[in-house]
Image (cartoon, rainbow, N blue to C red):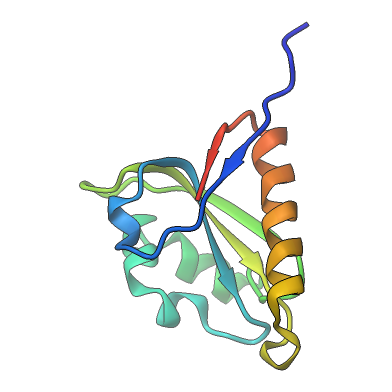
Length: 116
């Protein structure tokens, strides 16, 4: 039986397309229009973020996760995870830590060792 993958998480502040990772995690607040707030991410997924927002798959609710491939040319991440961050008024460093932990668990379940 293969050993479990322990994801390594890092915080990146550069251009999302330049991040070399297996899973690029992007938090979205409750009620935020993800595709409008993140047009580059929507383009990288060939419109999947906009489609998922319109269908209600992405609402920004705390810890909900939507994962889709980043298939646009020039992107260096395999997949993008849109993770619900809950209400913006409740956001703090503790919430950020918990979102990172939830994202690491998603990555581990999908055997993705690099998370940004």
